[in-house]
Length: 489
Image (tube, rainbow, N blue to C red):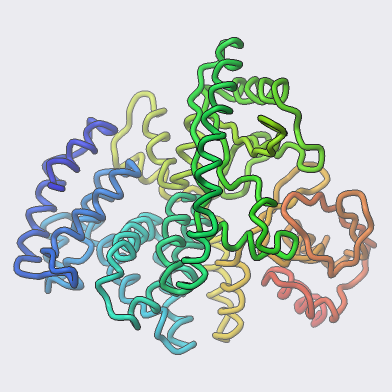
């Protein structure tokens, strides 16, 4: 790969990009890293080039591509911050410095206090400009792709760090493809036996599924064409690590026949109207599985911005199949998350605005980054390292569930959350006065563990106070602090 290939790629999606600046950044990085080599034996410049190429695949702005090329110049190139300011301006120098600081965070081998302090720095860097973390994720992706050249100890450390911190970060930013790739790259280093077992176990299933999907795809293409719906149908196997986690669920118990989205059919169409039209076509051809129902994440998107229709049907020869239907734009955002918003924001701007204005308007989208700002607020309040670490563990990087209020609002909660956690996430007064809960039209206890898709209705009593016993089962910091504050008052 050469810099001209990256510049060509950038020009295709952003004709106004400052290609001279990208070339200047490459020449600068090439000079700074002259004579340096990676553990693989390759010239060091291959790494910044690959990072910039990953960012170009995400169709990011000129500034991000430049930062990708320069991201190691401060740390490994013996260049001063003032040199970067002089050559590339304050904004680019600040972003390179931010990526460098995040890169210096020894998350895997730090003591608890250092670990917490380093996470604080990472969160502050994210809150200032999210591009710092997007560049860092691209950097981590390439480092994981070349992990085989490091020592066994470093392999395990980096793989654990990736699973614990970077993959969940990618998920919170809606970058589904980045998250899946990072998890799959870490999987064989941390769980080698399980990885080998899974690869062998699934080989035959994937082969049969691919053959079946060719026939199923042909049928749906024909039906959609008859209705005048232009579509692109594809399929992608479930990421291995995600599949492994699903197989471990008690109700699955390592039985692959109980997993219906091993390879899902994905139908991409032009408009929201066509999404629902395609759903009608699929259901007229194949009956939906009653127990699974339809998940409408278009009418009610997930809090990280994910939009799609999901249905599970009895397809050819009665075989159960998951079908996902979304627009091309929704698909781009499902794969690339927050990185995709810049591209679509700039495409829709009429008249076209400058890179600078687009960046400033886009890279702090409040609704997408409210969780980052929440963590920043908490870390200012918390002195105790253990308390902050627990907050991060549950509220920051835990697997998420999505539950609904009675009026259809979607709430993003960590796995293991209870009706009390939900109540406090809606409003502190609702949490304080909660006395019972109805989940999916059934009465449940306040320590009931919620699942994705649950409809939650809180029964409250005006003027009542929270119970100290609630602290034993709530998992969010919002609920914990709300309960403690009310009890003290």
